[in-house]
Length: 520
Image (tube, rainbow, N blue to C red; front, side, top):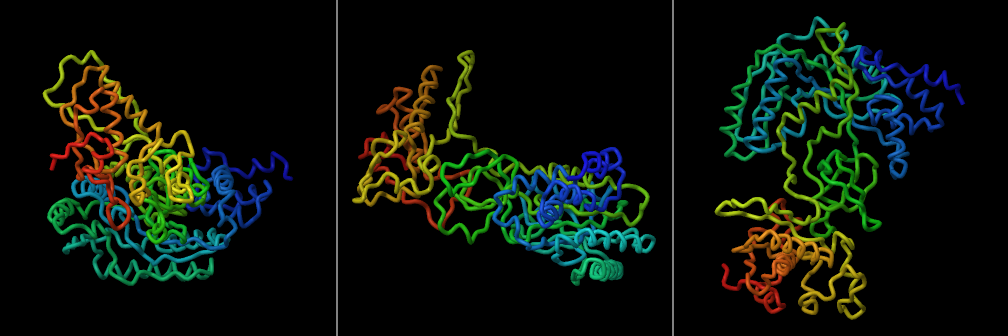
């Protein structure tokens, strides 16, 4: 075991790290991890997966991935080389990203920050990444003074694409730089890099509805393409296993209730593939956590859409014009990515979804009420959230009859005997969920709040919640529930190819729910 002084002598002090070269060097960090007893393949994977930021970050990654089934998998990461703008032009592009997202919603271009693609994605073994970064640094050094400046860009629009294209002659020069990097990478790191052969451009928007074209085109024409710009050669990587997955951001923490469920930590990312969703229940998806590498089922309304590049790892950034000036290093670039993401103005898609229903508190001091007040409430605690996607099997005997196997399960379910009504797709609420709803009703009653009309989704869990709110208000049998299909899953698309088989209002009424049968 190395002496304590020897270990710490290999860690560069933070004040000095701020002025280091922008290429991530992980040699000394690797020595420290090896001296701590980590196997070389794991230590390399941790450093590469965290961009070689520090020993501490690599250790954190290793400890969080201790149960990752692919921890010792030798599969390399995929890398890509981009030109990324900085300075005034970057500010203009960031403004376009923000305004286009706010005005027209997210399109495919928002998945990655503004850039010019110089090569196709390529693979590099973990032990060759340091050499790859050196190859990029050397190539940029050879091109200082030869890189075209300014970079002429021309706006191009079509029915489903908007971009800034590089003038053809200048684009040929950039392709020569990419070819030089390809040769240097092959010589130093023994990797095959295929330079981009198509027209070089900055994608502004694509794969958007045609009715958004005019608004996006107007915003694009506001970009001053002749503004000053220091183009940076940046190297990123991604996990090749999730290249074709959708990236989701965890909005709320979730503790697994069954062995096949995934623990969620707010701020983490989850990779989800459509091909893995065939056997999942309504409201549930199957995904893999970025922070742990573990896979499992998770509630769909606890995650929201994220950008693909949010999970990419940064490996190096070099300027063609200012070799002596530090471009801010890794931390600064990551901070700029955060600022770019913040400037997008992307309100999380599921920001209106709250945690399990809380008791509503209404201050009695509010004596002046508006003429019309709208109360919006989610359903109570769900059976499938508490007992898992296979909850039906837990409360069925060998003859298919409903059996209450847990005190939090309702004593009975309406119309269970009629083919069980596909309760997997239309789950009821638990006893606790009914109590939650009744307490909301009691809170409304205590605040002297009067309800004139009550609308709810046709989902059984919502009808049960509405019924218990009425009971808490002592309005059960007096105020009728108006079942409105338009309220079903208004915060997201329902999973699957068809809507659940809801219990019709006439049968709900027959099961003693106070439903307004005249409402259409």
